[in-house]
Image 1 (spheres, rainbow, N blue to C red):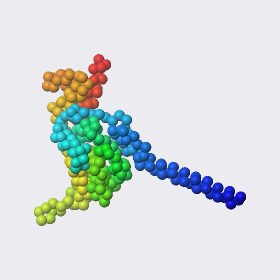
Image 2: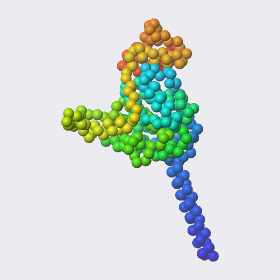
Image 3: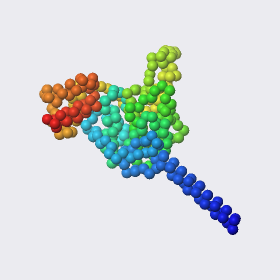
Image 4: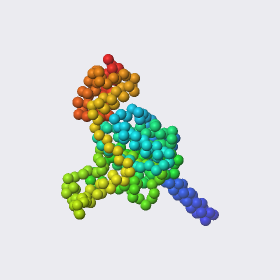
Length: 293
C-alpha cells in the first residue's frame, strides 16, 4: 500500500512537470509570434518579441504621392516583381525629411494587398530580432515587406549587424517571401565623421577607404535598390497640398494666387520646410479652419 501511494505521488508530480513544460513551450511559441491573426494586412513587431496585427493600417493611395515619380516607379516595379514570385531587391529609401519615403512604402499595401502583400513594421531598436521574425514569416504563403522607418545607427550600436546578416551575409538563405524596405535620412545609415575620411589611402592612383568607412558602406550596399529623395521646390510643394485638398473634396487651383495657396506658402515659410509632410499638416489646419468659419 505504501509503494502504491509512492508511485501515485510520483506520477502526479511528473504530470505537473509535464503540464508546466507544456505551458512554458506555449509561452515561448507565443513569444515568437504564436496566436497571430494572419488575416490582417499589416503587423508590428513588439518589444516583447510578438507579432501583433494592426487593425486599421494607413491606406494611402499611390496616386496621391506627387513629386517622386521616378522613385515611385522603381519601388512599385520592384514590389510587383516580388509579389509575382520573381527576383526582387531589398530597398533603402534615403534623403530629406518629409520627402515621401515612408509614405511611399505605406502606399504599397493597398496597391498590392490583393496580390498577397503584407507589411511588418519593425522599430530600429528591435532589429536584433530580425532572424527570429524572418523565421516566423518564412513558411507563410503571403509576401512580406519588413519595414523599418527612420532607420539609423549610432556609433557603437551593434544591432545593425543583425540587419547585415539578414540582408546578405548569413549562412542561412533569406526566404523568397520576405524583403526589407528601410527609410533613413542617412545614406549609409551610420554617422560619418571627417576623421574617418582622413584614414583613406591612395594606392596606385586609387582611393581606398579606411576600415570605419568600409564598414558603413558595407551595410548600405546590402540593399540592392537605392532610392534618393530630395527637398521639394515650391511648385511641387503646392501640387502636393492641392492633391491633399482635392482628396478632401476641396477645389484647389494652382497659380491663381488663391487664399489657400498664400496660406500654404506662409505655412511652409514658418516651418522652414517645403515637404510632403508640411503640405499634409497645412491641409489639416486649412480644412479645420474652413470647417469652423
